[in-house]
Length: 117
Length: 112
Image (tube, rainbow over all chains, first blue to last red):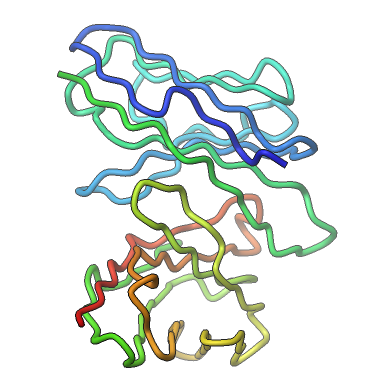
């Protein structure tokens, strides 16, 4: 299995531009999570989906951020317009619903390093 | 509320044992985890413990759970340079079983 795939791996853009980050979860996984990692704030959960439906978006910082999951094998995180404070590493993770109280292991992608100038 | 705290840095001499500590606030934890993040990579599950256990050992790794004090620790025996990474403590709870609450991570550095 290829694992969780994210693209691009690195993105450099200018303030005000639209940025789209992409994620392909592991086949068969029904949960998908978007995280943001910065030195100042650590690892933050932005939003997660179950069966392509957004369940909890309380971590999305502002209206400039939006996420979609049009099908089970693809999700996007969009920032429009981008600002320098959005610079971070963005991770996508997926997992499969376990039986009962399974260990709920999340599998992380390699991340997208976003730099907004 | 749910909160997981851990110290930010730990420096250990190669060959010694490393002990990374974590405290959490939610007493309804179900599973507690240690994730490892190597430079330039995503997080990977290192080990986990169910909340009704006190200890789990897996080769060089020992996890200790003190539910009374809400304290979790990870001991790495015979620490090697390849153990240099950020280690995240995390939990799931009955009230938020779908997601994992992560701590801020402890950066472990190994000195010769």
